[in-house]
Image 1 (cartoon, one colour):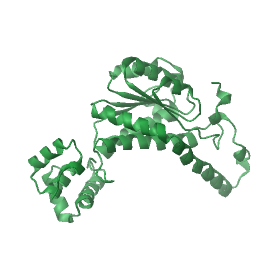
Image 2 (cartoon, helix red, strand yellow):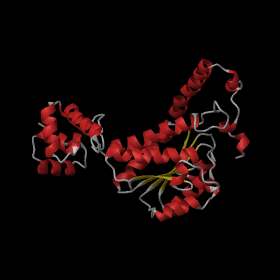
Image 3 (cartoon, rainbow, N blue to C red):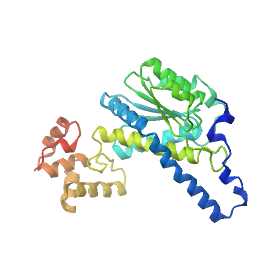
Image 4 (tube, one colour):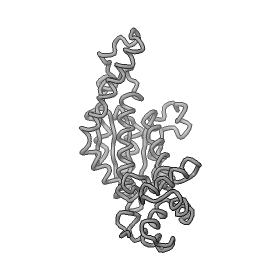
Length: 297
């Protein structure tokens, strides 16, 4: 697909005189454009649902999720992967973000990296991609060679493949088992896909990771019960989560948190069941990490 034919590269008639707008007009215009993104994501929900189910199955089988992309797309994948660790208590290897050119490309573009068809394959091979894993290829244009090559390599290994593009009829859709297309139309600033396209990608990635984590028991109600209490704020949040999940007092939550070795999920089970730490841990294991499956008092 020729670059000029992509809607993400076309000029937005509503912002032709961007440089002549007042700050108020600019803010109103950009906000109006951004409001269209959620509707575009909504139209892609059937494919997003399939992707969530595939990723959840990957996790249940002990597999890993890899995001691959270049530029803004790659950075958003790295961001979502990094946030899974503190939010859901996952190991860093469970969800990984790979960006064309390596981690230095997070801040400084690496010339030519995104145009290399073999580079993503090398990156995935280095991480020993397996058939139980899933790869999500992210490209606003939908045609980035780094992503195409990575998806093809993933298919060769038997891994699951999902594509995420911001143009309809994207090239990468032909290289994935599940294709998510979120056409967002012309950007406010012509060709700047860190704007609406980036917002759409962030929204979809939020849904993929959070939805899959819900499916494997990382959430109780709407509480992130596997949060890692790595700082003062998260310790306070952890104890508040215990209180919200069990309707207990601050003192009970604090004591349970300590007795559970600062394991929020385990503390909740202990409070709900009245069981000691070892027995509560056993029940939690039997329930495959789902608090809601455990019979409480």
